[in-house]
Amino acid sequence: MNKHIGIISLFIALLLTIVTTGCSSGEPAYERLRERMVREQIMARGITDSLVISSMLEVKRHLFVPFRFKMNAYVDSPLPIGSDQTISQPYIVALMTSLLNLREGGRVFEVGTGSGYQAAVLANIADSVFSVEILPELAERAKALLDSLGYGNVIIRSGDGYDGWPAKAPFDAIIVTAAAPSIPHKFVKQLRAGGRLVIPVGDFMQHLNVYEKRDEELKLLDSFPVRFVPMTGKIRD
Image 1: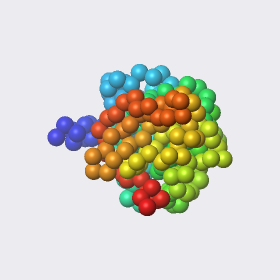
Image 2: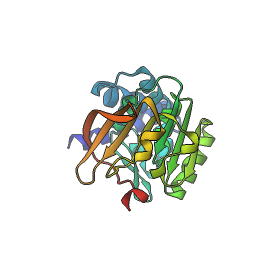
Image 3: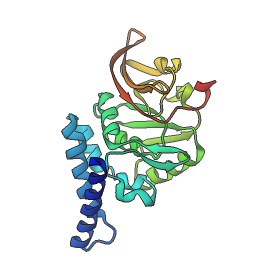
């Protein structure tokens, strides 16, 4: 019930802002809702990394969802993006980004481009983001959108992320946006010493695991219960 009330209140806030500003495009309204999202869904839940907060304020999530879901773009919920895939809820995007412990600069490898929203959030912090999407239609759509928005430091290719991206390794961080039954062993080799891997692991029971590479091995730092779409491709063979 509370979630439904939250959706209705955000919808009303968006309509009121459009009416009072006289802006048919709704951009001032979206900006206001984005600020509210960061304040109430992210900062209020313990995300304090200033780089993550700044990026979440900047990236326009409503541009990364289908038109019919734009009114709900700043609700703390995943949303369908087509091809049986979803864009993660804003809090999860902020949480995963903060868990990577990125400083300005660095190279990030992402498995599961999806809508491109997570890549955009990362791109405001990292020097470069290399993202692989197994579904060609999503890869093409995300690439076109990110290019149009000026994210020249995001490189997207369509393919299976199971093998990583050895030509672009080593990476300072690796992030996986779909649940894997296990950790692809090639990720360990392609991660720099001291770098972090953030990945949801499991099938029915999933946990978002945070690892750091130490002495050529991964050390588990933290784990949280989550629910993601499953990672597909060779990892399921």
